[in-house]
Length: 409
Ligand SMILES: Nc1ncnc2c1ncn2[C@@H]1O[C@H](COP(=O)(O)OP(=O)(O)O)[C@@H](O)[C@H]1O
Ligand SMILES: [Mg+2]
Image 1 (spheres, rainbow, N blue to C red):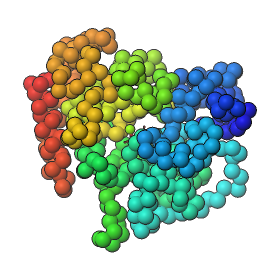
Image 2 (image 1 turned 60 degrees about the vertical axis):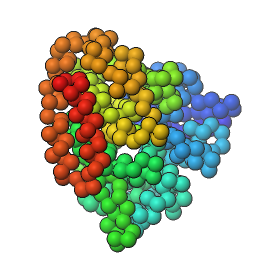
Image 3 (image 1 turned 30 degrees about the vertical axis):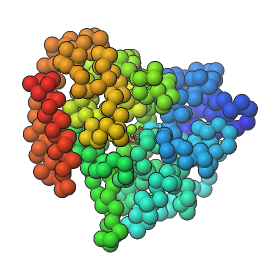
């Protein structure tokens, strides 16, 4: 063995991640009653999990795209994923945390992030994705390609996360390539929330510094955290790539990745409330179709391991990709519907075929979904009126109207 890293779940030692001389990873549970398990794809067993099984789970905890490239350039020797988790894995998606040795004598002092500091962090983030250049950088890793970091928030103040203070909110910042991305995501997430989908609280904010220095950002409450007696605790979650045991590159179906049928299988097999979660999954598909979100892939869907059992997590990363021109965004859907890969080519019969393929009653499903989405346009228009700088909302509503008529009209 070359290196070892202790893997904690909900604050308890769950197992060890190993890197061998050939830079292959393996994982072994320490106990035979580890609850929650790391992943539905890694049930507890006495022997260790080899690279083929262990690697996808751990790989999916790392940032992706440009952020990943910057990280590995600056911080990596040996297995890239092992190194990222060693360096940044103190606070990840869900309840998993990585330590070589558990820190003793933890400093319990909270370190506030002032507005001026927040501006500084936001400005540095694109070149320094996990803020390693910061004085006392947080050990924090989140998947995805958008520039983001996370904070420990109490009342309306932000604090740097550390071993004692897990992050409670994700902060996403503007993206030069995709104008109005924050308003776009805020609008779609808030619309879904108004429609009573299970959605974390989202706020569109600006830093409170002087006017010249303000920066817009999206503040998203973490659904994998809760507060008990004033202490932030973690709830475990895993995304559908982890649940399927596939690496993040396979989050798109084209190229051999996850399909809607695969995701449906995960829900049927592992959810403690299959009926509700399958319906919610169908609603997620239709919502993404209506807003024009081609990026609805297997990492944008998660399972939450609650004390009452495993369920489909609240939805996140809902936004319209189709408001951007085709030359800067991929119009191919992350997962196919009845073998088709473009939303605009879909007809009601393709959804009927999908429901049949997933062994759902098409007539019932269509009826349930139509009544679920019957108010989406007026709700969206009303929401648009309460958002300043709302031209982007009009573009999304236009897509939505066209799609609603096509599917349900
Ligand atoms: N509200 C949330 N609570 C907990 N985890 C979240 C939340 N939103 C996103 N995540 C986790 O963070 C990851 C990245 O977030 P996401 O919004 O998908 O970013 P990106 O736009 O970069 O893909 C997700 O894959 C999920 O694991
Ligand atoms: Mg995402």
